[in-house]
Image (cartoon, rainbow, N blue to C red):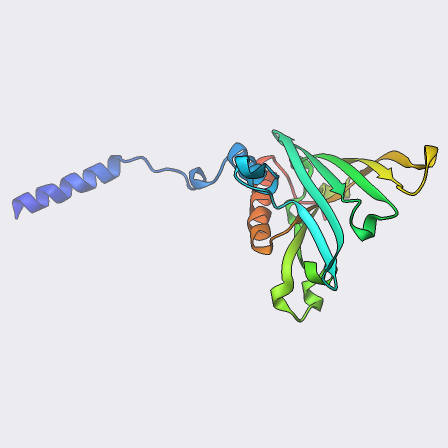
Length: 210
């Protein structure tokens, strides 16, 4: 009996001496979070382990209607979004655009992040309006800057394939407070949404005043 008590006392003594790790130690760091977002969202090809989920592709009556690819690069909290329309898609037969959007995660209001689900087979219509639940297979994550300040720098390059000379293309620059991620998988979009919010918080993003 004494031996049992001695063993128990030693066990509790060791337990008391063990360090108590803070709860946040189980959370991913900023570098880990952004690395996961990069390796899963961006296309790295077969050799890189995945083809990425940054794709908006919609169909009408079984035929391709729209295709836009998106990727991002990062340097700490600085994010650059790259979007490219596919000129072979019917929607962009008259004009297709490439976009570059730059912002700091610390300027994003985490409370503004919204996930919208849609159906690729019905022209990208909202899942709220589609009776066929199985077709709800794509999503958009939209976000805004704190207090809707125009802190997202945008650059556009529009091409008009049927025009010649100076009218063939144009460039422009702008600043806005809203941007989006396009995702080709709804379940993955929910995970990306969680990771993005986490990255915003780690970079010091604060909610809007009102």
